[in-house]
Image 1 (tube, rainbow, N blue to C red):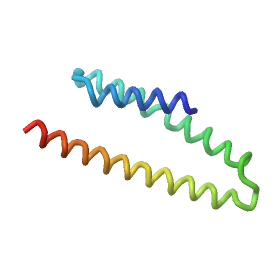
Image 2: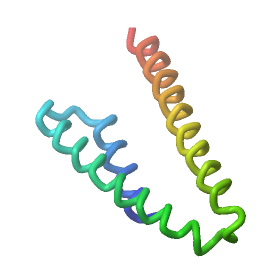
Image 3: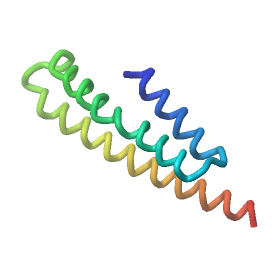
Length: 90
């Protein structure tokens, strides 16, 4: 799971830092997004092994909240990076 996420991050960095044709960007986007379900399925499957039965529901919710917060922070960081890079380019 860690290797898959690291490879997805590397592809996303490559998309952000290189000048590629639009079709290539779309193909890399599909390659990056497709394994997400697989990663989520495996992460949810390991929760019952890690958490006791009484804490499983709370652990699932905390995991969901953490995922959403991470996504929101990623959007925020991406927007800030675009704003800084645009100012530097002008």
